[in-house]
Length: 351
Ligand code: KG4
Ligand code: ZN
Image (cartoon, rainbow, N blue to C red; front, top):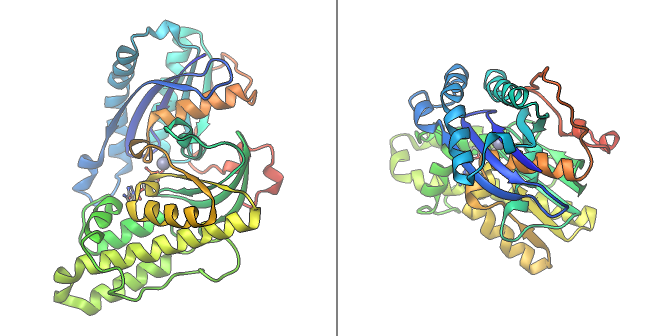
């Protein structure tokens, strides 16, 4: 079963091809990506209309590139998958429209995939893939969630951010320090040269007793600190970056460990853009080693948005018998879409 995956939910156009034959984890045959970061940088954030137009420009050449890389013909595709949501409506419509027209022209079925399910399953493409069941810490630009994952398609929400996501906390803090978009990786790089104990910043909801997160207050505290520093900010920026990162990472690590204790599971899977953060990885590795917990990550280049995770999620859902494929080409996109809706255990979910 050869699956083409197309991702266009935000500021990355990703295309990939997987072989999901049999029951083994699908094999990644080829993938290609175009990031719009340079284009949006001038505006300090994603401009939705520009994002949609750029997806239109990039998606067909990327499909050709992937087919050439894999040495395969479009006629050999069995399924065309695309990100159906959540994300920017106009951007999603590009991937959905292209996927449906390609599938229609080939007479093959088409399948809409949940973007977060793609992130969540992406560690299965790593050199050290997890086994079910596990706790997933999903930390992207738009979401911070802890989930109990029993098997493909079974996602129980344990806790989530009640306001900003972890990636947003990185990005907004970076922005008010004058760092370029997207702030997360820039802040992380600067933090490596700073003193994490230099500024006392809040660890919101750390002792709340539940598994929810809140990062909006942290951003306000960073702003207050930056204002207090005034002209001194420039010379103390690395310290402020390190202190901000330390606050975010501490909350993510401690809440993840609470989720492990509450569920009694011994495997943790980290996914989403913030999963690329080196401080988060090293602290999780250390604490998991101490507690005998296995921790799994996506390969670094598959932490942020990409087509491979969409093709993979489609392939794994097909293998699990969760999809009934039809050659029907009416489509919609779901800019707001809960992962609960793709899970048979949705009654357990509280999104
Ligand atoms: O998963 P993703 O590519 O997009 C969404 O689905 O939202 O995540 C993007 C987020 C951004 O907020 C970005 O700043 C953050 O991931 N990010 C990082 C790092 N790399 C990406 N945050 C902290 N440290 C990093 N190294
Ligand atoms: Zn994403």
